[in-house]
Image 1 (tube, rainbow, N blue to C red):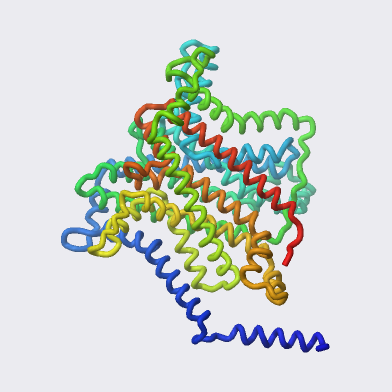
Image 2: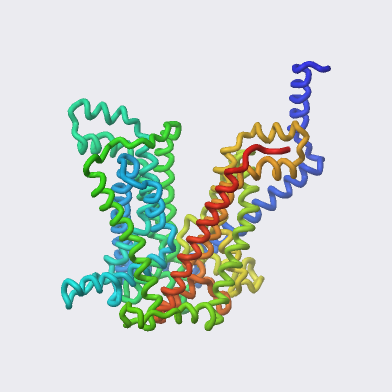
Length: 585
């Protein structure tokens, strides 16, 4: 029997022979073809649209020109809209950072009750589509909402605060995005060594001084990263300003681009492209700053997360828990119930009573209007196809990215992330420009069909599956694959019996995120849809624009039900997968 040293030498020699480049072998040729094809696809689907957008913004009758930019910069309306944009973005970011920091401190440092359930309530504000949260709050604060009914009990002439205002847009934007600050900040707070805080307290500093001089500076990278992410999300958001701002003539950059494009003027696309370039540059600068903040906050990744409470609330625990719960439930759950109650009324002006409760709005949506069923079918098919393609391509790309890291694959990942990094309205316009005539003289006839939505969804959401796949592969040591290979398992056996059982929970989480995001998408669909290719988000937007609030709230209520059912199924699948122990070859 050969010795262990001989076997080890044989394995090393075999690995060495396998690692030698063989340019004449079929496998090497196929790999080169696949790599070249992939790079061409990345350039065509991700770079070409941006180049088309940039060129159109500087295209003039006599060559390249910045005339459109000069014209816009000289108009007072442009600066008025820029002012609105920055007021909304900065105001909502400040609100999200304040609320996120407060909630993160209580969740990370105190013994507040029912933290797991409270964590889900916090995330629900962000999981809900922005237009659903907007309809919830406009219903809650509307003339027939719960807030108006409560105020009338106190004073017959009292009226609630109108959501159709700058303040309403800032408020809904802030509460929709504050979970981003919460997630970043809570993670950083739990990694701060408590010895530093104890040393500060032992030196005579009080709780507030310790927080200001020790905790806050150490948590600043996480807070900044979350704040910049909120900045980008609010800059990108189209639904909230479209629902709350357009009816009262309040425009921000995203809605202004939409208004320019649907106006179909002689220079509509050129002006839209120029505005998109301005919005895109702001977003890319913000993304770069956010990346720097995240990289800085990752310097403490090796520190263990401290889940134990650092401050005991004592006798204040009960009433502080009640206040936090009331605040968070009031932000999300109560407005949802108000929206659902409005969707059950026979007419918009009817009071909420038994004689005025009816399911006729749901009957109209589910049975009487064929366009709605077509939109629901379109959304599900788009989401399902996007999920499948992103799951396959994203998983394979993530595998190569982790197992064979190189500058080429890292660059490709950065390029693929651009459509998701850019505001949706900017990306949608770039898709219109490239697919109207991808190559001079060739029009594939894709623009105005469902096909362009398929391409746009896959390009925009592919990075979500790639990031989920990269995270999943990093948790599986490469020695597992090596052991399977030495044991005689082929590629199919390795994936089917070894990798997929270990990777499935992480991959399914990414796939669910892709499916849910595609199912409730509005911004890209509002720019690219045509007759017969409407989606759920577009139908809700159309109902609200036409003043059919009862139908829009009924459809939004169904979306909430779908999200709850989908999240429950995902938890059930992950629970069942977690019970499987061991791997069989």
